[in-house]
Every structure is written in structure tokens, then in C-alpha cells.
Image 1 (spheres, helix red, strand yellow):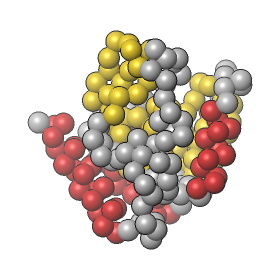
Image 2 (spheres, rainbow, N blue to C red):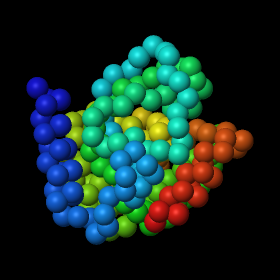
Image 3 (cartoon, rainbow, N blue to C red):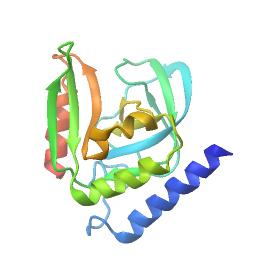
Image 4 (cartoon, helix red, strand yellow):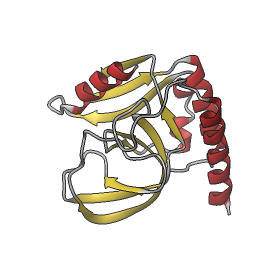
Length: 183
């Protein structure tokens, strides 16, 4: 029952965002990289293995479920099934690449004030400890819980969307490059 309530709340927030026309721009063709390139989706289930490679030239359509590789795994590998988008960013204020204490690369975005308001509303509507996924370019970047998404730094506009990536991994630079292009 709790799962149904959070879905209804998330869909209501998403509908409000869509009706408000937050970008003022027409939507791009479904499935292509667009202003909605960075997505937050609920985790519905994990599967043992069998996910093939992803197409990093596309972003999954926002409606319906998608099944993608788990973060930081190679195909064929374990999969995660994700629900429809509850939040998609049209722009970000900035993309920050940093290093963890262990020397691994992390990617964070800084949100504009309208995006931050949307983010805060969606995160507050999620059930506590609900697993979510940051999706970008047909890849699951990370699987934070609602508790992690509600941390003070994130609620003030700086959100880590990926972490624990090696210095040789090309994705942090790709993410930064593409997000800066659509900002």
C-alpha cells in the first residue's frame, strides 16, 4: 500500500512539473537525448544477470519501466528494473567532477532554483529508504535511497549522481560534457 501512495504522490508532482512547462521548449523526439537527459526513477526489482550493453546515444523514454545494467558493471551483467521517471532535469547549473577519499571519481550536479524546488518536492514525497536510480545516457549511474537523496547537501542543490568510478572510466567526462551541452 505504501508503494502505491508514493507512486501517486510522485506522479502528481511529475504531472505538476509537466503542466507547468518547466523548460518552455518543445519535447525532443522520444528516446533521444533531450533536455530530459538526467532522470530519477524508482527501483522496481533486481534480476540475476543477462543485461546487454546499453546505447549511450539515447535516454530511455520517461514513461513505463526499463531494465538496465546495474551501475559499474559490464554486459552481460546484473540488471535492475526501473519504473517511470519521477523527475527529469532540463538543465543543471553546473557539473562537478571530484574525488572521493579513496581517490575514485564522483560526479555531482548543482541545480538551478526551479530544479531544486522540484527535486525537494519529489524527494519529500518518496517513502523513507525507497531505492531510486539516477539514469543518464541509458545507464544507471547510482542507486541512492530516499534517505541519501534527502541529505542536507542534496536538499540544498548539490546532488551526487555517480561515484566510485575509476580514473580511467570515461563516463564522468562524458556526463559532464553532455550535461554542459544541454544546460
